[in-house]
Image 1 (cartoon, rainbow, N blue to C red):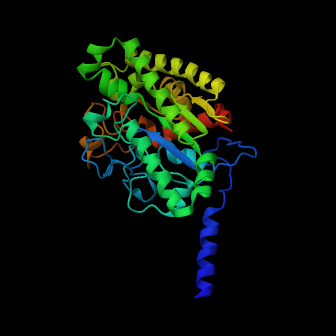
Image 2 (tube, rainbow, N blue to C red):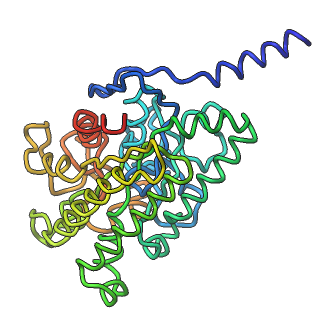
Image 3 (cartoon, helix red, strand yellow):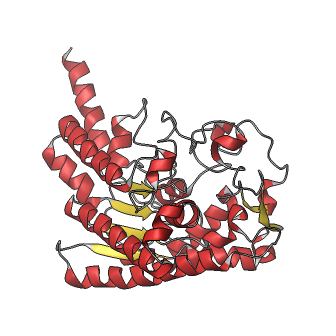
Amino acid sequence: MASLCRGYLLFVHLLLLPVALLPCAHGAPADTGKIKISAVFVFGDSIVDPGNNNNRLTEAKADFPPYGQDFPGGAATGRFSNGKVPGDMFASGFGIKKLLPPYIGDDLQLSDLLTGVVFASGGSGYDPLTSIPATATSSTGQLELFLEYKERLKYLVGEEETTRVISEGIYFTVMGANDLANNYFLLPLRRHQYDLPSYVNFLVSSAVNFTMKLNEMGARRIGFIGIPPVGCCPSQRILGSRECEPLRNQAAQLFNSKITNEIRRLNEEQSVPGSKFAYLDIYYNLLDLVQRPQFYGFKEVAEGCCGSTVLNAAIFIKNHHACPNVNDFIFWDSFHPTEKAYSIVVDKLFQQNMHDLM
């Protein structure tokens, strides 16, 4: 019995050891120097949701074919792509683990909780109204899940170890695309309340408040991923044209410009000492793929592998057939990129300014 107890204590001790930092799994140098990274945490929308919506009554889910056809084992886990999504790539890029699991799940192990999870929910946004039609977990709801996570971890490993994991973790937030595409430009309410520049200002304010609350809850290194070129998604392009829709892209650019200034301000003010914030540019990195597809080995930029209308994504393509040549496509469905496109963009993020979080 004593040897059994010693074996259990050794197992728990090994679980609590800091994760060793490895080279970036996608070829991008994750140069962390001597900085310890205990875990990766991600908040956001369907760009990074790995399955938190699976048991929700929502159209914004992806736990069925053809999603996941190129995921390990061909499993449709709830990731909105043919394979891995950015959260997985962040975790493997920092040498934490190969896959970043959803927080809402039945099979989370202690090792999963210690090394990071995803709180993102497909259909969510910084605007609290955005998540309502999709019945997604709002940005505020995701912070509440993070608080629940902290209490859960504290119960399992104690306050000191929980503080270490939280303070040495690295955090990413990925929202805003739904606020534009599926709220402002689709539904009438916000357009009656705001002109576009005013709505962008509202989003920026909401995003800053979210980031500050996350910072106050213990997050010290926060990577803020901007809004992608929404107007280049197949479902958002000009009807009957292969051109990107300019107004949606202009709104994304305006948001990204303003949030960059706000992140600079947060770094200067240091409301919580020792904090670091970084803007990570998904907009121009993804746009570069759209504008120079052949350079990256793509052949199709305007169509999705699973279709191109607003009804060619999420539950609307359940058990549909995908194209046979997915690696030729930048977009998997009418809204989300392929694993290949995500991998290229994430590599670029590591190569550019990920070091600002170190």
